[in-house]
Amino acid sequence: MHVETLGSGPRLVLLHGSTRPGWVTWGTQKPLADRFTLVVPIRSGYPPNPPLERIDFADQADELLAVLEPGDDLVAHSYGAVVSLLAAPRAELASLTVVEPPAFDVARGDPAVEEFLRHFDAGVPTDPRGYLEFFAPLVGSDQEIPDPLPPLLEASARAAIAERSPHEAEIPLDELAATGCPKLVVSGGHSAAFDAVCDVLERRLSARRAILPGKAHSIPRLGGPFNELVATFVRTTQAG
Image (tube, rainbow, N blue to C red; front, side, top):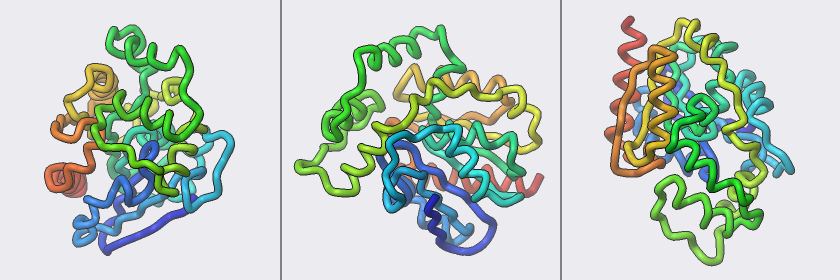
């Protein structure tokens, strides 16, 4: 797992989701380097790591544990948040922030979750452009998909295609709830399915909850409001 760092101060680990590795997700968080050492792992299978035929959230939870140090604050987006929810019970975190994890197993039976998952019943496109055209509307993205695809985006789409479906993850809610680290759950207020997952996590983990609208699933792209939410949460946990 390739890791990049920036800044100085307490370690703030930022784990990306699907299709947008590393600083592509976390570029607007670079101002936080004035207050934190930003530790940005790039999940295996995503460039500059070599490609993989299969990416499994369970394996990546183990890889994340090798990066984490006692006392880290962990912030994770989307698929990376599922990986983090699996790793967190075995880590010594100061805090955990998850941003719209597609951990749909925790909210099975919710109508919005079931409707979201039905989109996958007919199969997911296996070519990079087809996958991006399928995936982007599901998460509320209105970004234009360039033609031709830039090499990084094409490689990242291939990595996303290789990912094991995140709704297969069995999140250890009781173990997570028993950990001492404070937890923050963030959604974008654009999707009833993601809100259903976040509501379950808020309730089962006794987590703090925040809704930041404006960028749909790509909440870190909000920059300032998201950065201050995270920084304030981390400062509060440090003071406590």
